[in-house]
Image (cartoon, rainbow, N blue to C red; front, side, top):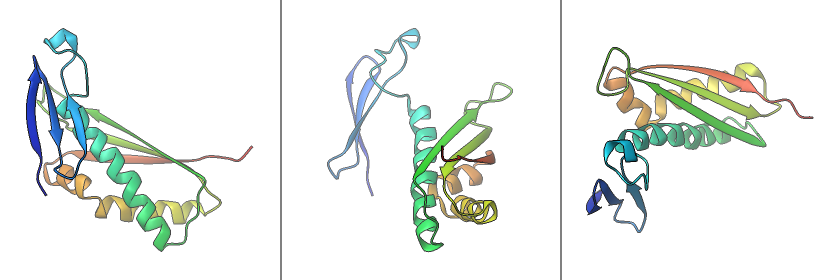
Length: 137
């Protein structure tokens, strides 16, 4: 696995994964950027959110949990002037007929398996979560 970053202008750069995918990183205009993309720290949080969504899908399939909707909101906090995240809250919203207990078990297993979440955990970032089960209209 390899990533390559190329500076393009001011605070803007393009990051590639060398498999044909790229992401634009930048800073907001208030920090001398052009606001053309997420900051690296925002991308880190976005990666955690995406990883939870992907791994939940993998675990749910193995547990035979079917769903028609799945959203993951991930909120990072930097407390006491910390330079990076100290706390992350994950809110999973799911539209499923599976039991609350089964969904809870699936999310707990997801958080143990999510490689990005493991990095956050190893860095000492406190992660909490909540589940909202959506009701069909």
